[in-house]
Image 1 (tube, rainbow, N blue to C red):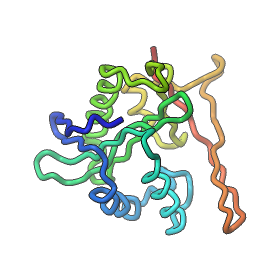
Image 2 (cartoon, rainbow, N blue to C red; image 1 turned 120 degrees about the horizontal axis):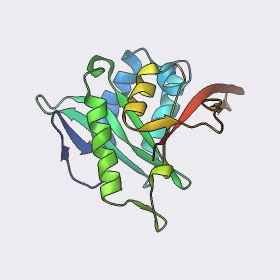
Image 3 (cartoon, rainbow, N blue to C red; image 1 turned 135 degrees about the vertical axis):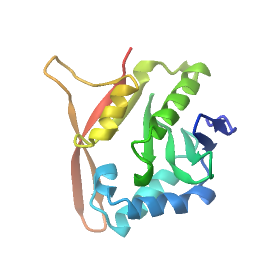
Image 4 (cartoon, one colour; image 1 turned 30 degrees about the horizontal axis):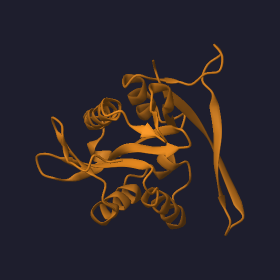
Length: 190
């Protein structure tokens, strides 16, 4: 689903994801940023890092990921994109710690959301509409939650009572452990 072309924004080049080029710097960020649990919901370990990398690198054709590079010095700073979940698409992003709070993530997200809707991405012949675009974050990830609200997403609520917290989990067969953590779901505001 990537356009196959490099997209230029004011400060960034969004390059179609390439595992051979981008995995090493991304894994390095996940190890060094110190917020693996805030991003993935699990405590950091080499085992969980390997599970996440395997998930990240094997989404097949139901994804659209762009690696983010600074225009000035061509440094990898993170990624932004979507992946398919049944008939919906989840917006995903990660920016390395030293590049946060500079507007890069918002700049990249705005660009890929615009491309998504301008090009009329379809899923099994159905055009993706705003109601099909969502994002999931950990409730205490204030920066990600704020960014989503600035992008036009709203917390998904089933009543006027507030946000819906959903439990998400990962089963570790080897250790026979189940790790559950709450997430908040945001949907594109229409």
